[in-house]
Length: 247
Ligand SMILES: *Cc1c(COP(=O)(O)O)cnc(C)c1O
Image (cartoon, rainbow, N blue to C red; front, side):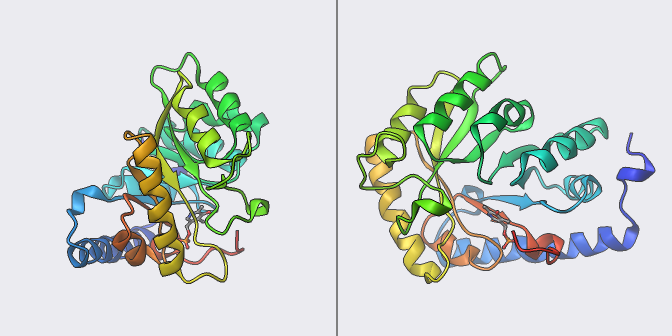
């Protein structure tokens, strides 16, 4: 079903295959070093800025999960990939405005960037009527700086306090509370960031035992995230190459 516009050239396919093998072996080594079962860690290929053809090539190489951070880009790409006959799970990992909720729930299996009660309500309303709940991970601000997104641990804020956000997701019929997501803050050693995240995750599981997923670790720090319990690593540049612009 794949037509020429969604098919990569053989050299690109070989490049993706080699990068994928390298990332898979990094993940396996990190699991072995941490004494963890490899099956506990899902790799999400972050395909932002790269075309649908790359997603299809990765899917043909066995990648089951892909991540995108902008609705406008992701919606079109997901449609192209579906039209070509592939069905990876789409993870939305970027900052999300409430007015994009209706679009995102059409293609996303999971949203990792849920960080306010208001966004939980918007996604719940948008996902009502889907054939399956939307998997939701609450994004946590590890350094407590609200300007870069993320719910705030140890805060009683009714919109962005972590307790309030987790409760809103847990009680939303069209959402399934899966766990937490974080990005290591700029200027923090990944070790310190993921150690802090692991503490927050422990608190979360005490209150919401079903919230076992931990989405942490990117191309540069996935080994450290796996050491601190990551169940989902989001890998972009190590698989697809350096992106033209940082975002
Ligand atoms: C882009 C992005 C990634 C992937 O980053 P790489 O360093 O390219 O692996 C992971 N998580 C989020 C939230 C991103 O926006």
